[in-house]
Amino acid sequence: MRSQGRVAYLALLIAAAFVLSSLERVLPSPAPMIRLGLGNIMTLTAFAVLGVRDGAWVTFGRVALVSLVWGGVFSPTAVMSVAGGAASLIVMVPLALSGGRFSLYGISIGGALAHVTAQLAVASAFYVQSADLFRLLPFMGTIALVTGIINGGVATLLASRLMERRRV
Image (tube, rainbow, N blue to C red; front, side):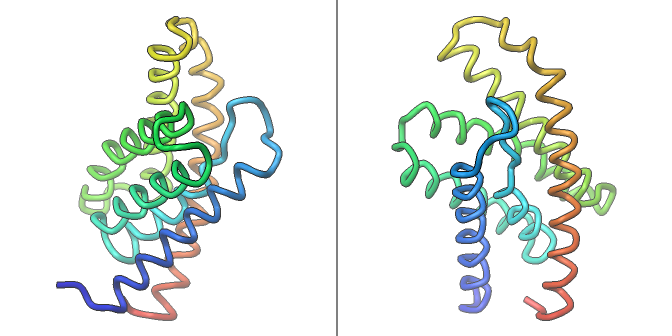
């Protein structure tokens, strides 16, 4: 059974992930199809502060809220978000459970690369119906690498501050 404080902490991380993802949607994008993955900062923070299971709940909660508020449950945006979130968790969870072999930087980079790859696969299969979309992978992968590093750094700082201030 979970403590009320832990559940409240998890809810705050989900809400923060939703706010960051929503902010990212309303700010101008640096290039078409480029997202910074700011909501993932909260997933990474949850991995470090609360554990992998709660980090996965942050991703599930963020994806569900973003889908409901920003485009409908079965919209292309929602489908792409679910695919990216699922793929990133499939990669990030084993990295996070590797006994400390990977820092939040490495976990973030792995998740970002998986997210981009899954979104290109879904877009290629369902919306464009062409494998030519994978020609964008080197460019999108480079952007994912950079944003993964930045988000991993922010999450590392945030997690260390949170752990200093409060033990969960």
